Image (cartoon, rainbow, N blue to C red; front, top):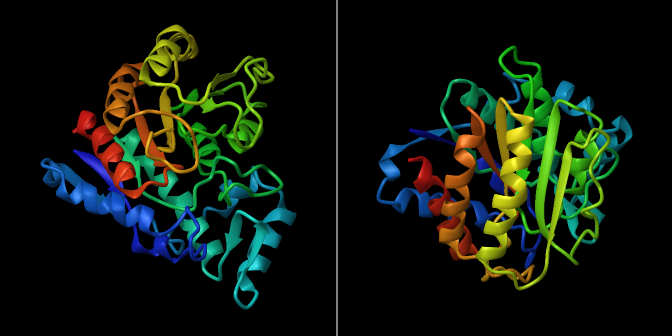
Length: 304
């Protein structure tokens, strides 16, 4: 069985008319999973409520307190505010972002019980740095989850694979000083946010950035996995693999120029399964609704 961690509360982060990071992204995924032929083999779970687990101690380990105050202040203003032109903060966004962190922490908990999970949550997180959110992201869900995992006695080393089409500058910012965490990103280059050069290897050689040229097809990703990604993780030997699962490298996606198909993510998932004894997936980008739903179904079809 595969655990799906989801709440309608994630729809309350409002980004405005026409914004690509919209609540409908999650409903498209939920509808696609419920319609899948093996949908009855999924177990649906609400994220741990904020009244039962306060994620702020874990968040505060990585994010600057002044930034957290700013985020809370923007949410408390009438009508909300924005961190930048792309990253709105609505009145419910702060609490929803905290709940999203809890959902990613739940992903760790399920993995520790040897049950793979997919976190269907928003806002996404991999662009949020220690001092500022950006690129639709408010809190660095994946990096926070990785540090939380290291507090568990079974986990000594955590790997993060980021196959979102954009480089996770925030994730790298928050893990590159920790030799117990490694990070690998495959991302379109040139593209937002302009980071993720192949020469940037982290402070402990624990970062692998793989810039991919626009209009690349699956064989380019396959070669990168065979020649770089798999050897990198095998050498690191993680106890837990977190997949920052963005689906904006799909050919149908409006925000990038890659040419992957939904079924390609099934092939990538097949290759990463043997790389760690435990794993879970957390949603990042992906903005064409039908393609997003189909790609998540393809991913989980391998695990089911």
